Image (tube, rainbow, N blue to C red; front, side):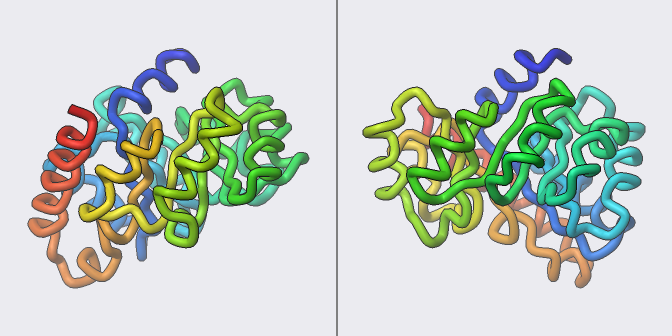
Length: 214
């Protein structure tokens, strides 16, 4: 899959599951449950234990059936490591010029975290294909809509604070996609073995995205 195809797929899916799994084994089971519910855009964060190995396992298991990326990139070696593991897109929680250069050098789709207008524009200038508005819970859909005023050409994706109750509002405000973490797949549910509930929640999120965009 080319970089352009990956970017188009993110826009098509409209939803990325942001996973901070409690263990490698439980993280894979979380992904299994999400996929059963229709969520195929998967971001494994570096706060997941042994995250690169988890990505390698998921790539071997699902191949091109899912869109797999890595998030919470904070160190300069993370981008190359994530690419080697099999990630197709890279996500940082903040806007760091040095890290942005390393991310862009991979040739993968790059999402750089930002909050303020200055950070959003800087992230775009540094090569972000999509600017991740984080934490979305502090901003809200109204804030994203306001950003679209001066920056209509910059694709924006909120992460953090995305729920079934506000997905419609995020897309109405101009989001190209949304990133959902604990609201979609709570780590506590994985620890408790509630994978059927994760699947049902994934189905509900997919339907909410479909309705919001339809």
